[in-house]
Image 1 (cartoon, rainbow, N blue to C red):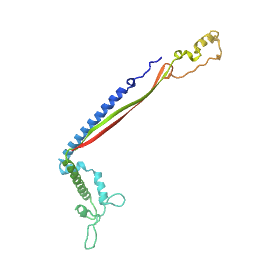
Image 2 (cartoon, helix red, strand yellow; image 1 turned 90 degrees about the horizontal axis):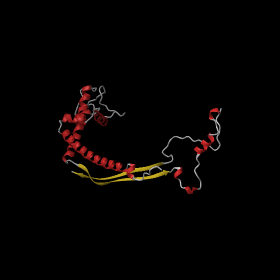
Image 3 (tube, helix red, strand yellow; image 1 turned 180 degrees about the horizontal axis):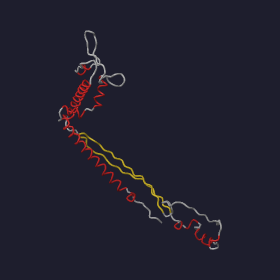
Image 4 (cartoon, rainbow, N blue to C red; image 1 turned 45 degrees about the horizontal axis):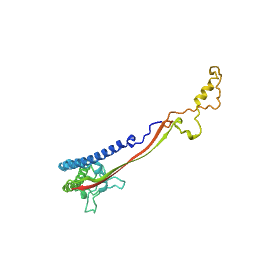
Length: 242
C-alpha cells in the first residue's frame, strides 16, 4: 500500500504561508520607499527653472490638446497651423480677430497667414501657461508637507481544503468480500503451455483472457490521489500622516 499523505506540511502549506507573509511585507516596504522617492522627485522638479520645468512637465500632446480647446476648427483639430489664414481685428470694418490668438494669448501674428515662427511662438505661450498652472498645483501640494500613507493594521488569513483518495491493491482488499482475486497471469501461463506460438499462422483467441493497454497513471493501484486548494485573504488598514 502506498504511503498516505495526511499532513498539510507535505502539501506545501507551510511554504505557501511563509511566501504569503514575505510578499505582503515586501509590498508594504516597497510602497513606503516609492512614496519617499516621489517626494524627492517633486522637490527636485519644483527647484528647476521655469523653462526646464515646462519642458519636463508639459508634453507636445498636452499643448496640442490645449490648442484644440482654445482654437477648435470644428473637425477635432485646431486653427494654429502654418499656412492657415489669420485675420486681425479691424474695428473700422467691425471685423473680429480670427482665430482670437492675440485676444487669448497676447501674441499677434503680422501676416494674413500663420508662419512656422508664429506657430512655434503660440505653442510656447500655451506651454508656459500650462506649466504655470501645474507649478501652482504642485507647490500647493508640497506646502502641505510630506504626506505618507502607511499601514495601520490588518490581518493575513491562509486557508487550505484538501481531500485524499487512497486506492488499494487487490491483495490488500478485505477477505470478507466473498470472492478471490482472479490470477489472470496464471491462467495465461497454464493455457500457453498447451500452445506452440511459433507454429501459429494467425492469432488464436484465448477464452476468458482479456488484455487491456493504458498509459501509466498516478491513479493505478497502490497510489494516492491528493487534491488541494490553498488560498489567502489579506486585509490591510491604512492611515495618512501629514
